[in-house]
Length: 83
Image 1 (cartoon, rainbow, N blue to C red):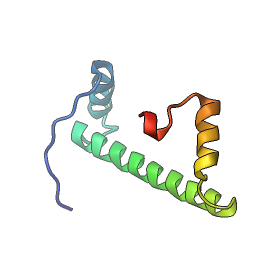
Image 2 (image 1 turned 180 degrees about the vertical axis):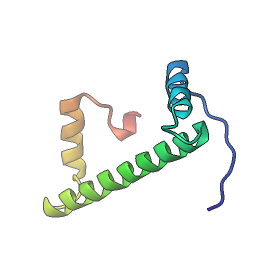
Image 3 (image 1 turned 30 degrees about the vertical axis):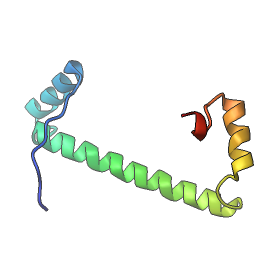
């Protein structure tokens, strides 16, 4: 698998925790830990997308514009035209 070096910004306390995991041998490296975490997060996103697609399929599809307007009103979120 091809890789590319990037720069990321982490909270200092999170970075320290990752360094401790590496020191204890619980992670191969900081880079390895971040690669694994990104993979887990991407799998999570894919899983939620599949779950949502199934739920929408079982309940009649995506919300209609009127249904979305009702949801936006109830939740107090701006409509897409207001964003």
